[in-house]
Image: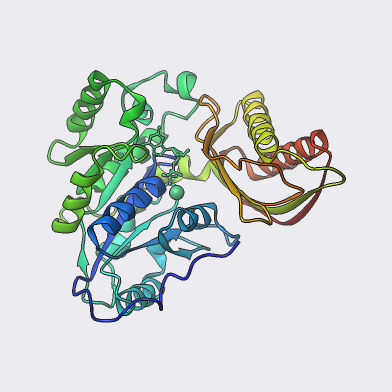
Amino acid sequence: MQERPFFGTGIAGINRMKKFGIISGFLGAGKTTTMIALSEYYKEKGIRCGLIANDLGECEMVDAAYSSRRGAAVRPMAGGCICYRTEELSDVLEQAFAAGIGLVLSDIPGCGVGALDHVYRGNLRQDVELAPFAVVVEPRQLALLSDEDVFYRIHLPRDMGELLLAQLQEADTIVLNKIDTVTEAEVQEAVSLIRQHCPETIVFPVSARTGEGIPALGEHILSGKAALSQPEGLGDKKELDAPQDRLSWYDCRYYVKVCCDDFSPDDYLGDLMESARFSFAAMNANTPHMKIFASGEDGSFAKYSLTGIDYPVEKDQLYGGRAVELAVVINARLLSPPPLASQIMKACIDAAGKKHNLDTMIFSTDCR
Ligand SMILES: Nc1nc2c(ncn2[C@@H]2O[C@H](COP(=O)(O)OP(=O)(O)O)[C@@H](O)[C@H]2O)c(=O)[nH]1
Ligand SMILES: [Mg+2]
């Protein structure tokens, strides 16, 4: 899986802007999709924007591969949150600016509360302008802020709401994403709920999928500044440990090959995702975000996501045709202890492989 080179192809000195911004937010809220949509918007305006895809696993990352295939200039930073890697982040920014990129946006992994303290208030080497600290949330997840019965509706423990609230409190700018999935009245309801908790924070309702609201958000990031006025130390709040500790991080890279004939990667990936959804649901567990990126020999690729057992599988990119072999990467954040999560995933990969008559060769699995 080749990333397009992020740096080294630009012309130094063309762009005077040196700006860096973080797009934080809850699992599956749409950080990556929003960054891709913003980078497309900036490209149309002739502004060179680079993305950092930050993740915890050492394994190749679905987000980096997918963003790159969508045409974004992306640089993966795997193996840990940028919160604790300011030296390395400084190097990456230096390379980006030297290559003529004017604006760099980075996400932070999953529950990454604390980037404000560690990165924005940290020791970045460059004389870099900081864009408003943006936090992405989607309407369904807001139930965590208000609904006592949230576990029965979306199978996330109530204390995940503490995490969500801490994220929103860190924000200079809240991006209410996925407005294409709700009515106008529900958008207004969601905005009022956010305002009850964060009365001073500007809210941008957007759909990263359709592009609605992206130009306004894009201009705001371009012209706005980080306020750096939020409460300190949210990332170190002890109450936030419990919900984060319950999530395991699963990364797997493998290869499948059909023994004879060919097979439909879309049917295979759909079966794999559905079997994961069913299995985690049966164990009273959840899949807050599971992503699969699969690529074939001819350059075709697919990307599927699951943002919880209560929601349908999202086919962000269909593979389309048929294949004889497939390289697959899975990155998932699972609400299940690591040994069980790993066992369930292995059983799902085995079952889907068997159903489609595939030989499966697992290169690496990491679950913690
Ligand atoms: N309907 C809809 N789906 C979206 C939107 N933005 C993201 N998604 C989907 O939500 C899932 C998670 O998005 P992703 O960007 O990977 O979330 P992240 O974990 O915050 O980076 C994917 O299936 C996306 O296609 C949106 O605006 N509308
Ligand atoms: Mg992402």
